[in-house]
Amino acid sequence: MFNIVLFGPPGAGKGTQAVKLAVAYNLEHLSTGDILRAEMSKNSPLGQKVKNLIEKGELVPDETVISIIGEKLRNAGNVVGFIFDGFPRTVEQAKALDKMLADEALEIAVMITLEVEENELIERIRLRGESSGRTDDSDTSIIKNRIRVYNEQTATVADYYKNQGKYVPVSNMGTIDETFSLLASEIDRRLQIAIKS
Ligand code: ADP
Image: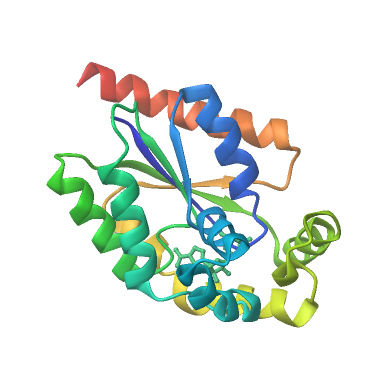
């Protein structure tokens, strides 16, 4: 299996690129944001539990997202690999992911961080909010709070993967297709190494 973490601040374009990579490499795309929003629109007990936090731009509790991902991993069946999008967002989540994968004799091959300048992030999220209807995308103070939460609680996850020699930064200041090519060449290089070893 070839498992990828796609990382980066809110609005960096993780979702857009993860969908394209999942198609190109036949990977199972796991987005905690998408899963949580689906629960919110069903108004399930889980959706009700996380709604308030998501709408404020705060993280939902580690146990909640860890158990969601654990269940997805257990029920995945025969897949080529996973692309994790929006998870892990804390070092606790990263450790739990490593443990859940290790239990199945699996690991993360690479963690790719999409890099976008902060002013550009705010603009991109606001623009997305106009069409997505996401309430957390429509209010500048909530957008700024999400970026603050990223800087304070999530950015350090990069160090966790740096220490494992798995961290790869990729600029996403260019077009969607340009970034996709950059990501694909990083992944292809590692796939070659994985096949040879
Ligand atoms: P974005 O990357 O644009 O912030 P996401 O769809 O990844 O959007 O996440 C939306 C919201 O869902 C986050 O602001 C957070 O409240 C919640 N969330 C998603 N993934 C996680 C996670 N791994 N840990 C905690 N909260 C999460």
